[in-house]
Length: 68
Image 1: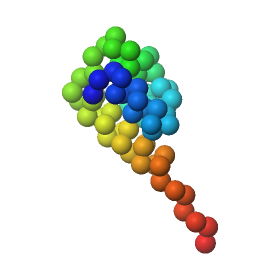
Image 2: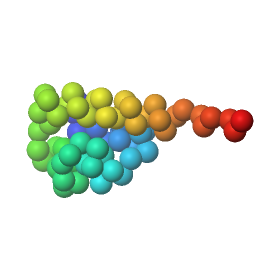
Image 3: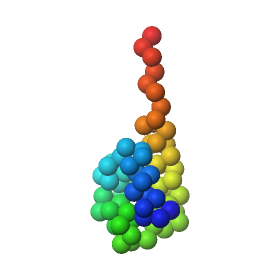
Image 4: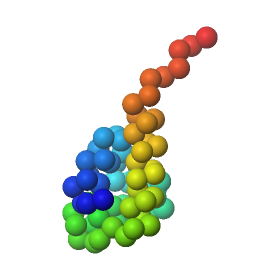
């Protein structure tokens, strides 16, 4: 995952940097460094980012349940 891909995926999931950082267990400054390319995204981090962002994107796009 590249820095621009991360920024786009986070935006598509509707997450702030802080929210993504909390889900990842890192500081929000780490997310900023990854998104700006100042720090490389490791393979393990990229896999976890993919999992977290995929789950968050599904939640953001899924319609709410109808009231019974």
